[in-house]
Length: 234
Picture 1: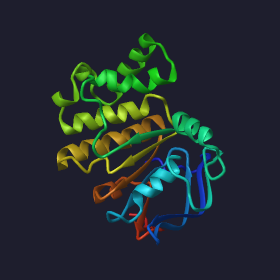
Picture 2 (picture 1 turned 30 degrees about the vertical axis):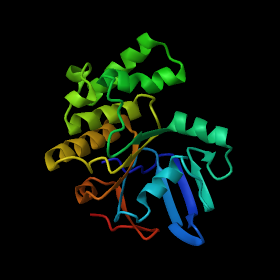
Picture 3 (picture 1 turned 120 degrees about the horizontal axis):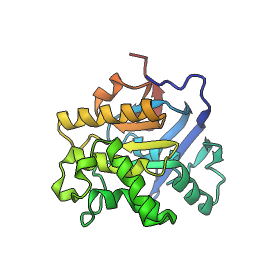
């Protein structure tokens, strides 16, 4: 399993904190988080709903800004970066995978995958070639013309992973990627993510309730009430 040993540092977070305001109340979503991740690692973060997992992923992906602390991802300072710089950072560095797939129902699998390429300005023909190759990587070469409604939940998540991977990001942030799947489909998605990590060297950071992911993690953390703690190696 890839552990990142000897590889370049991808994430450096020190004293990372995020506070939201709810009326006059302050809600601490993340408190004094420390995280160091090398390129190629497979990191799993477990914890209860509301414990801060999604908040941490949003900070690492440049979707939200920390209230305090230091955060660099792939050499970009996400604390001081402008809004335009954060947009470029997300586009060039991060692939997102969500629990409910977020596929466009009117488009087939291939069209869903090529959307990020077209948004970047790539022409249709090379976009189609890259999208088709990526669907083959996730085992769906035979389902490219099917719409999300014609695919199982596990197949839809494979399309979502292909879409996240097609721009060749340095990191995939997956928020409960198996949360809407049965145990068999969940197992196949875990195996797929691990295969992509090992074969292509893409860093995965997976926030989950699914404790089966702890069995394949290079490193694992628990995030409860905003407090991030590393778990003992299994």
